[in-house]
Structure formats: structure tokens, C-alpha cells
Amino acid sequence: MIAHAGIVESSRNARALGVAMQVTLTRGDSIRDGVQARRDFAPADGERQREAMNRDIRKGRGEVGQDA
Picture: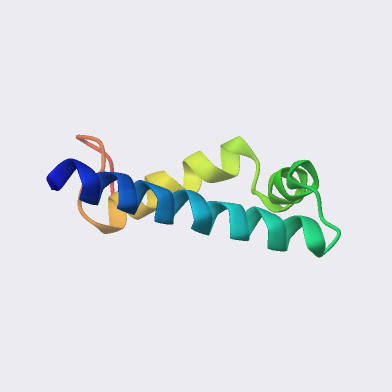
């Protein structure tokens, strides 16, 4: 019974993923284009690291001896 429930849940997830992919492709966007668009709008690595460091400092997790 438990194995059967797992199979049903797995098929629901697969169906949901298939619908999501179908919607993406029907809109005329390819998955590769979507990934490229996210990369284009993502901040540069240095910017990401600076933001993460600032977040850590604000939360009190800065490096030892570092002024917040």
C-alpha cells in the first residue's frame, strides 16, 4: 500500500513537470533560452559575494575582527 502511494505521488510529480515544460515550450521559449536569460540578469560573481558578505555582517556572522 505504501509503495503504491509512492508510485502515485511520483506519477503526479512527473505529470506536473511535464505540464510545466509543455507550458514553457508552448510560449515559444526554449528551456535553454530561459537559463541564458537568468544568467544574463544575474549579478556578477563578485557582486554576489559582496551581497552575501553584507548579509552575513548584518546578521552578525561577519568574520572575526571585521567591523560591521
